[in-house]
Length: 263
Image 1 (cartoon, rainbow, N blue to C red):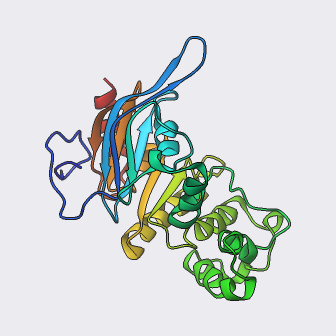
Image 2 (cartoon, rainbow, N blue to C red; image 1 turned 90 degrees about the vertical axis):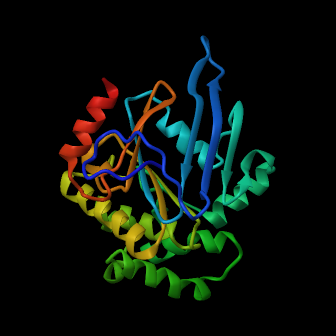
Image 3 (tube, rainbow, N blue to C red; image 1 turned 135 degrees about the horizontal axis):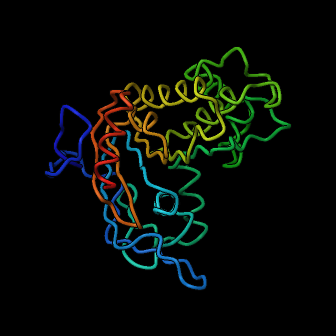
Protein backbone atom coordinates (compact mmCIF):
# COMPACT_ATOMS: atom_id res chain seq x y z
CA UNK A 1 0.00 0.00 0.00
CA UNK A 2 1.34 3.47 0.80
CA UNK A 3 3.42 5.19 3.44
CA UNK A 4 1.45 5.96 6.60
CA UNK A 5 0.40 9.55 7.24
CA UNK A 6 -0.90 11.14 10.41
CA UNK A 7 -3.96 12.44 8.58
CA UNK A 8 -6.13 10.82 5.94
CA UNK A 9 -4.63 12.77 3.03
CA UNK A 10 -3.65 11.41 -0.37
CA UNK A 11 -0.69 9.06 0.01
CA UNK A 12 2.01 9.26 -2.62
CA UNK A 13 4.92 7.02 -1.68
CA UNK A 14 4.95 3.24 -1.91
CA UNK A 15 5.97 1.09 1.04
CA UNK A 16 6.68 -2.60 1.24
CA UNK A 17 5.17 -5.24 3.48
CA UNK A 18 6.90 -8.29 4.87
CA UNK A 19 3.89 -10.46 4.11
CA UNK A 20 3.06 -11.15 0.46
CA UNK A 21 -0.27 -9.73 -0.69
CA UNK A 22 -3.31 -11.90 -0.08
CA UNK A 23 -5.00 -10.20 -3.04
CA UNK A 24 -3.03 -9.20 -6.13
CA UNK A 25 -4.83 -7.43 -8.97
CA UNK A 26 -2.57 -6.68 -11.92
CA UNK A 27 -3.43 -4.54 -14.97
CA UNK A 28 -7.07 -5.63 -14.85
CA UNK A 29 -9.52 -4.51 -17.50
CA UNK A 30 -13.24 -5.14 -17.46
CA UNK A 31 -15.49 -4.08 -20.32
CA UNK A 32 -19.20 -4.84 -20.31
CA UNK A 33 -20.62 -5.90 -23.65
CA UNK A 34 -23.32 -3.31 -24.11
CA UNK A 35 -24.10 -0.72 -26.77
CA UNK A 36 -21.90 1.22 -26.52
CA UNK A 37 -19.45 -0.94 -24.52
CA UNK A 38 -18.87 0.21 -20.94
CA UNK A 39 -15.35 0.13 -19.49
CA UNK A 40 -15.71 -0.57 -15.77
CA UNK A 41 -12.01 -1.10 -14.99
CA UNK A 42 -9.18 0.28 -17.10
CA UNK A 43 -5.81 -1.31 -16.32
CA UNK A 44 -6.22 -1.28 -12.54
CA UNK A 45 -3.57 -2.76 -10.21
CA UNK A 46 -3.92 -3.26 -6.46
CA UNK A 47 -2.31 -5.18 -3.60
CA UNK A 48 -4.07 -6.04 -0.34
CA UNK A 49 -2.06 -7.47 2.53
CA UNK A 50 -3.23 -9.94 5.19
CA UNK A 51 -5.02 -8.59 8.24
CA UNK A 52 -5.82 -5.20 6.73
CA UNK A 53 -9.18 -3.48 6.42
CA UNK A 54 -9.44 -1.77 3.03
CA UNK A 55 -12.33 0.38 1.83
CA UNK A 56 -13.05 1.17 -1.82
CA UNK A 57 -14.69 4.51 -2.54
CA UNK A 58 -15.83 6.20 -5.73
CA UNK A 59 -18.81 7.71 -7.46
CA UNK A 60 -21.50 5.55 -9.01
CA UNK A 61 -20.04 3.86 -12.08
CA UNK A 62 -16.44 4.20 -10.90
CA UNK A 63 -15.91 0.43 -10.93
CA UNK A 64 -15.82 -0.25 -7.19
CA UNK A 65 -18.41 -3.05 -7.17
CA UNK A 66 -16.89 -4.57 -10.31
CA UNK A 67 -13.53 -4.72 -8.52
CA UNK A 68 -15.14 -6.52 -5.59
CA UNK A 69 -16.83 -9.02 -7.94
CA UNK A 70 -13.49 -9.72 -9.66
CA UNK A 71 -11.75 -10.43 -6.35
CA UNK A 72 -14.67 -12.69 -5.41
CA UNK A 73 -14.39 -14.62 -8.66
CA UNK A 74 -17.96 -13.67 -9.57
CA UNK A 75 -17.02 -12.11 -12.89
CA UNK A 76 -13.91 -12.63 -15.05
CA UNK A 77 -11.69 -9.78 -16.29
CA UNK A 78 -11.20 -9.09 -19.99
CA UNK A 79 -7.51 -8.63 -19.36
CA UNK A 80 -5.00 -8.76 -16.53
CA UNK A 81 -4.79 -11.09 -13.53
CA UNK A 82 -6.57 -11.55 -10.21
CA UNK A 83 -4.83 -13.69 -7.58
CA UNK A 84 -6.26 -14.54 -4.15
CA UNK A 85 -4.02 -16.44 -1.73
CA UNK A 86 -1.63 -16.95 -4.65
CA UNK A 87 -4.24 -18.63 -6.83
CA UNK A 88 -5.07 -17.25 -10.27
CA UNK A 89 -8.87 -17.12 -10.39
CA UNK A 90 -8.87 -17.10 -14.20
CA UNK A 91 -7.24 -20.53 -14.27
CA UNK A 92 -10.01 -22.11 -12.21
CA UNK A 93 -13.08 -23.79 -13.64
CA UNK A 94 -16.50 -22.43 -12.69
CA UNK A 95 -16.88 -25.23 -10.15
CA UNK A 96 -13.42 -24.62 -8.68
CA UNK A 97 -14.23 -20.93 -8.25
CA UNK A 98 -17.55 -21.81 -6.58
CA UNK A 99 -15.81 -24.13 -4.11
CA UNK A 100 -13.03 -21.61 -3.55
CA UNK A 101 -15.56 -18.86 -2.74
CA UNK A 102 -17.45 -21.11 -0.34
CA UNK A 103 -14.34 -22.27 1.49
CA UNK A 104 -11.93 -19.31 1.36
CA UNK A 105 -14.06 -16.18 0.92
CA UNK A 106 -16.69 -14.62 3.16
CA UNK A 107 -19.23 -12.30 1.58
CA UNK A 108 -21.45 -9.70 3.27
CA UNK A 109 -24.25 -8.32 1.10
CA UNK A 110 -26.18 -5.07 1.40
CA UNK A 111 -29.51 -6.92 1.69
CA UNK A 112 -28.27 -9.54 4.21
CA UNK A 113 -29.27 -12.60 2.08
CA UNK A 114 -30.57 -14.59 5.03
CA UNK A 115 -33.01 -17.45 4.44
CA UNK A 116 -36.30 -16.47 6.10
CA UNK A 117 -37.22 -20.02 7.17
CA UNK A 118 -33.96 -20.60 9.07
CA UNK A 119 -32.98 -19.36 12.52
CA UNK A 120 -29.96 -17.12 13.01
CA UNK A 121 -27.90 -20.16 14.09
CA UNK A 122 -28.95 -22.12 11.02
CA UNK A 123 -28.25 -19.19 8.70
CA UNK A 124 -24.73 -18.87 10.12
CA UNK A 125 -24.18 -22.64 9.77
CA UNK A 126 -25.43 -22.79 6.18
CA UNK A 127 -22.10 -22.57 4.27
CA UNK A 128 -20.72 -25.62 6.09
CA UNK A 129 -24.01 -27.47 5.62
CA UNK A 130 -23.69 -26.88 1.88
CA UNK A 131 -20.18 -28.29 2.13
CA UNK A 132 -21.49 -31.59 3.50
CA UNK A 133 -21.19 -31.05 7.26
CA UNK A 134 -24.01 -31.98 9.63
CA UNK A 135 -25.89 -29.41 11.69
CA UNK A 136 -24.79 -30.81 15.10
CA UNK A 137 -21.11 -30.59 14.19
CA UNK A 138 -21.45 -27.03 12.84
CA UNK A 139 -23.66 -25.44 15.52
CA UNK A 140 -20.90 -24.98 18.16
CA UNK A 141 -18.91 -22.79 15.76
CA UNK A 142 -22.07 -20.97 14.65
CA UNK A 143 -22.88 -20.22 18.30
CA UNK A 144 -19.33 -18.97 18.93
CA UNK A 145 -19.59 -16.61 15.98
CA UNK A 146 -22.97 -15.33 17.11
CA UNK A 147 -21.30 -14.53 20.44
CA UNK A 148 -18.52 -12.72 18.56
CA UNK A 149 -21.12 -10.41 16.98
CA UNK A 150 -23.02 -10.09 20.31
CA UNK A 151 -26.08 -12.08 19.22
CA UNK A 152 -25.77 -15.24 21.29
CA UNK A 153 -29.17 -14.46 22.84
CA UNK A 154 -30.87 -14.28 19.41
CA UNK A 155 -29.67 -17.54 17.89
CA UNK A 156 -33.10 -19.19 17.70
CA UNK A 157 -34.84 -16.19 16.13
CA UNK A 158 -35.69 -16.07 12.43
CA UNK A 159 -34.76 -13.00 10.35
CA UNK A 160 -38.23 -11.42 10.56
CA UNK A 161 -37.80 -11.20 14.34
CA UNK A 162 -34.46 -9.38 14.03
CA UNK A 163 -33.70 -5.73 13.31
CA UNK A 164 -31.79 -4.79 10.18
CA UNK A 165 -28.61 -4.31 12.18
CA UNK A 166 -29.04 -7.69 13.85
CA UNK A 167 -29.62 -9.38 10.49
CA UNK A 168 -26.41 -7.88 9.15
CA UNK A 169 -24.52 -9.09 12.23
CA UNK A 170 -25.85 -12.60 11.52
CA UNK A 171 -24.56 -12.18 7.96
CA UNK A 172 -21.14 -11.14 9.30
CA UNK A 173 -21.04 -14.24 11.50
CA UNK A 174 -21.97 -16.39 8.50
CA UNK A 175 -19.19 -14.79 6.43
CA UNK A 176 -16.66 -15.83 9.10
CA UNK A 177 -17.84 -19.44 9.43
CA UNK A 178 -15.20 -21.07 7.24
CA UNK A 179 -12.35 -18.94 8.61
CA UNK A 180 -12.05 -17.21 5.22
CA UNK A 181 -8.88 -15.74 3.79
CA UNK A 182 -10.71 -12.52 3.01
CA UNK A 183 -14.12 -11.02 3.78
CA UNK A 184 -15.80 -9.03 0.98
CA UNK A 185 -18.42 -6.50 2.06
CA UNK A 186 -20.57 -4.84 -0.62
CA UNK A 187 -22.14 -1.67 0.83
CA UNK A 188 -22.88 -3.57 4.07
CA UNK A 189 -24.73 -0.65 5.66
CA UNK A 190 -26.75 0.42 2.62
CA UNK A 191 -30.03 -0.71 4.21
CA UNK A 192 -29.31 0.47 7.76
CA UNK A 193 -29.85 3.68 9.71
CA UNK A 194 -26.91 5.73 10.97
CA UNK A 195 -26.75 4.13 14.44
CA UNK A 196 -26.83 0.60 13.04
CA UNK A 197 -24.28 1.56 10.37
CA UNK A 198 -21.80 2.76 12.98
CA UNK A 199 -22.24 -0.51 14.89
CA UNK A 200 -21.47 -2.54 11.74
CA UNK A 201 -18.41 -0.45 10.77
CA UNK A 202 -17.06 -0.67 14.31
CA UNK A 203 -17.64 -4.43 14.33
CA UNK A 204 -15.76 -4.89 11.05
CA UNK A 205 -12.93 -2.78 12.46
CA UNK A 206 -12.80 -4.97 15.57
CA UNK A 207 -12.85 -8.19 13.52
CA UNK A 208 -9.94 -6.95 11.42
CA UNK A 209 -7.93 -5.80 14.45
CA UNK A 210 -8.75 -8.52 16.99
CA UNK A 211 -9.32 -11.53 14.72
CA UNK A 212 -6.70 -10.64 12.11
CA UNK A 213 -9.20 -10.86 9.26
CA UNK A 214 -8.60 -9.25 5.87
CA UNK A 215 -11.61 -7.14 4.90
CA UNK A 216 -12.35 -5.46 1.58
CA UNK A 217 -15.39 -3.18 1.75
CA UNK A 218 -17.13 -1.14 -0.93
CA UNK A 219 -18.75 1.99 0.47
CA UNK A 220 -19.79 5.46 -0.65
CA UNK A 221 -19.72 6.83 2.89
CA UNK A 222 -16.67 8.64 4.24
CA UNK A 223 -17.73 7.79 7.79
CA UNK A 224 -17.63 4.06 7.05
CA UNK A 225 -14.35 4.28 5.12
CA UNK A 226 -12.76 6.03 8.11
CA UNK A 227 -12.90 2.75 10.07
CA UNK A 228 -10.59 1.13 7.49
CA UNK A 229 -6.80 1.09 7.50
CA UNK A 230 -6.63 2.13 3.85
CA UNK A 231 -9.07 3.69 1.40
CA UNK A 232 -8.69 3.12 -2.34
CA UNK A 233 -10.37 5.84 -4.40
CA UNK A 234 -11.60 5.00 -7.90
CA UNK A 235 -12.70 7.20 -10.77
CA UNK A 236 -13.61 5.93 -14.25
CA UNK A 237 -12.19 2.48 -13.57
CA UNK A 238 -8.81 3.71 -12.32
CA UNK A 239 -7.25 4.28 -8.92
CA UNK A 240 -6.73 8.02 -8.47
CA UNK A 241 -5.14 7.70 -5.04
CA UNK A 242 -5.30 6.18 -1.58
CA UNK A 243 -6.00 7.49 1.90
CA UNK A 244 -4.83 6.09 5.23
CA UNK A 245 -7.30 6.80 8.04
CA UNK A 246 -5.76 3.91 10.00
CA UNK A 247 -9.08 3.07 11.63
CA UNK A 248 -9.44 6.54 13.12
CA UNK A 249 -13.22 6.69 12.44
CA UNK A 250 -12.67 10.38 11.59
CA UNK A 251 -15.00 10.96 8.65
CA UNK A 252 -13.88 14.57 8.13
CA UNK A 253 -10.33 13.48 7.30
CA UNK A 254 -11.52 10.91 4.78
CA UNK A 255 -14.01 13.33 3.25
CA UNK A 256 -11.35 16.04 2.81
CA UNK A 257 -8.86 13.61 1.27
CA UNK A 258 -11.51 12.15 -1.01
CA UNK A 259 -12.56 15.57 -2.25
CA UNK A 260 -8.94 16.46 -2.98
CA UNK A 261 -8.37 13.28 -4.98
CA UNK A 262 -11.57 13.73 -6.95
CA UNK A 263 -10.61 17.29 -7.80
